[in-house]
Length: 232
Image 1 (tube, rainbow, N blue to C red):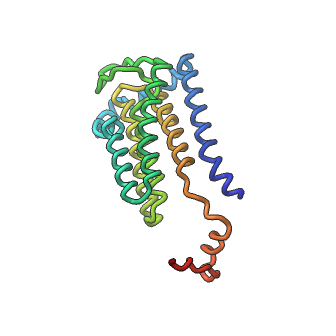
Image 2: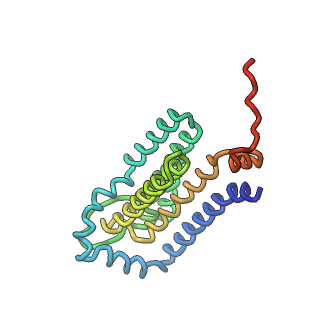
Image 3: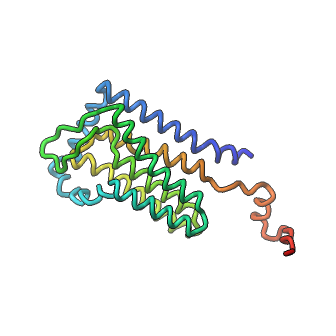
């Protein structure tokens, strides 16, 4: 029962913590407290030495674009339905869509202007906080990581794929600062906001608890099992 309570409450508690982090960041941004942090990190990421090294991020940033996460949602919807898990498939696609809508609402509420940097590599319109690309990447690839963790793939394969997805999320966020279209605090807020959606997905689609009897049978292959009921 303790494990059941943890499995139920854990994701919601983490979602609450991430939501509070977004709220705190929004307040700090409004008060200008994070400006020194944003300036210091931006100077490092956009330094002449890092400019050429991070050039591939110009393509990586597209993995957080609307078209990319929409593609992920469609793949989840079709793949999950074909695998016989329509509930998880619909929940995954809906979470990605709902996450994108919430991001736009938060942007309008905070209404932070875009960074004014020298020689921006890309010019974006709209508000800056939080980073939509960072949040969308966290939601889409975070949900994919959850789905992979629930598959029958080998442990090493699952770990490698989840690490790869984590790197994608991280690089999309860094790319937004490198391109000169977001402050670092925008990116952190985007990751945190995306994590709220992923945690909610985990909680709402968690596998059914097998119960003590099933656990004991799984732990002891020699344990007696009842025969399935006869047909008819």
